[in-house]
Image (cartoon, rainbow, N blue to C red):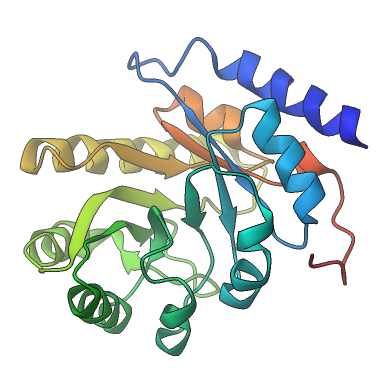
Length: 227
């Protein structure tokens, strides 16, 4: 298994080595939900750019066992679980609503830090997914970009699970357009996090510069294994 993880990371890194069509480096974030610290550490040694958890308690339990590497958070975050993460996360991908943004800003100010966040955009307007609606994204950015305790570093999206490639590309292009708009508004905007194991190649082709990959690195998850 160890050799397989290393080989998979090296394969993905080779795919990403030429960057996206906009000349940007593509950052490989390993989605480590339900993975052992041993497996995560091999991915780190193999060259992933960051590791990301979905659940605060899992982050808490594994963080001290994982080698130095940027720590990201990519899951739905309840405000009462921020305490497990504050000051330890380099980038929150899933800032998806105002109450979370407000509480994260408050806790950051109390700790004397600034938390880096991506605004999660529900670009497909799916009822099953959280995030700000695309139509309100610019207003939301303008507002949260002025919030003490937060630094908005860009945008995150999860594309719908569909075989309609035309639709997926259209939605990805919309996210790239939003990202380009954001870069004009603020020099802090540097990340468009879009693409997971099933669709990262398409997303990179459409301008994503950060992908979140789990099963393509680690294989099928072994549920019940947390440390």
